[in-house]
Figure 1 (cartoon, helix red, strand yellow):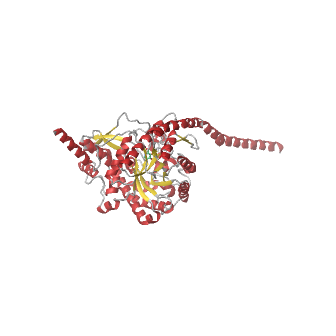
Figure 2 (cartoon, protein in one colour):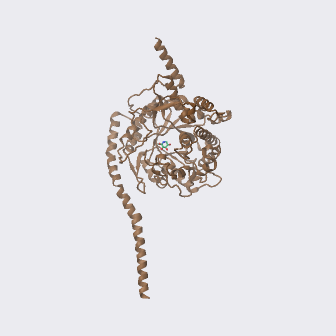
Figure 3 (cartoon, protein in one colour):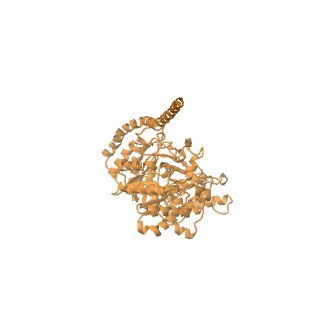
Length: 565
Ligand code: NOJ
């Protein structure tokens, strides 16, 4: 009796720790056969620096990623995105790939320095850059594919970093707004879904705390919070500008894309674990989502960072404070929430003593664990844990008032020495994650679309080209960067054409059929070095031989002339 009472109390505490979210209800149910609501949007994603190449072409300015990647020792094998997939030149081919997949939307990003080389609208607008995005948008619309445009996928103009310190500086809020306005002015008649920032967690933590990403700063324990503060304000400013100036004419929606892992308590009946898991999610997703939906940072962030700052002898919290006016300014500035999700962690409480030093990670007082049984086919951090996706989606529903959601990123990479286009693990990943998404939709989560990450293998930031997320394999050794479909293209196509998973019999045949087609692609790819070789012959050997012939004939001609004189 007493034990039951204690359990009930523990359960009640668990529930109250996460608002309406029920931590105890983790149904790892079997596969669900069914379809998505009519009109559900299926897409793929990409970003400018990861795929465009053409880093110094047609008047483009430098971005922080151009500069960072050119520094030795920052990127695996010192690779750069200079040419990447050459998407700048091949977008027509890529749209054909999308048409074949019968996609409803394509998510891509605008490179700020491609259209504003110095970052500032008042200085110079690069019309060639504008034309590139304009043509891309037109062709997508002609192909009945909705463009979903991200304004900032990490490539800040280098000038703004050098002059002002990038996102450490409040002036970025105004400059970003000018850039966004230019995009609304030039593309807004055709683009109806805008994403201001992609994954601000990464921009802040990896760009300003750990320095793994551009601009590579290590301002531990404070820089990330400052960058995030300015990003939140910049998002809100753009939302307000759109609302006042463009919304009535253009009728678009402004969202933000937040990426978050799910955090599951190691022991769901242990209150401290539940609180640690909740902190994990609030320091990840809530850091941005709570101000934008509710007007301020999560209480738990204010409490932990404030207390630790005090213990470190600082006069004020390292977490910036929103004034009352700012709170009402940032609150309610998301028309839809873009959600990127890849993986899950188990979380437990762990104290970091104050002498440990300032750091975002120490501020959270928790430890992350993984189950060694979870599959991890690619990137070191990416374990396949499909049920975490449904949990995260339900958490968003309960915490933020069931907002409209577009899944803006979800996918898996491979890290392999030998290339194999029969990517069984990716088909498995999509099958299970999309199925958990379907379950979440049935739970009542308001999801309108899903974006597989990514269309092509691309430049995977500090990992260079060593981690491949693409549905299409890109042969980076070949100057033409040819694309080859992996089996998952066929698999994803089936999900799209059925709008989900119609029946067991049908779904079970998909993988088999997809594998049948990929072996021929494997052969094509195997023959590719030959293609590369032939190109080398036409592009290098033939011109060299011709030049030599001309030179020799000239010498011979002079020799003849001399003999005659
Ligand atoms: C999130 C980033 O937005 C994207 O650029 C990256 O490729 C994926 N994560 C995979 O790491």
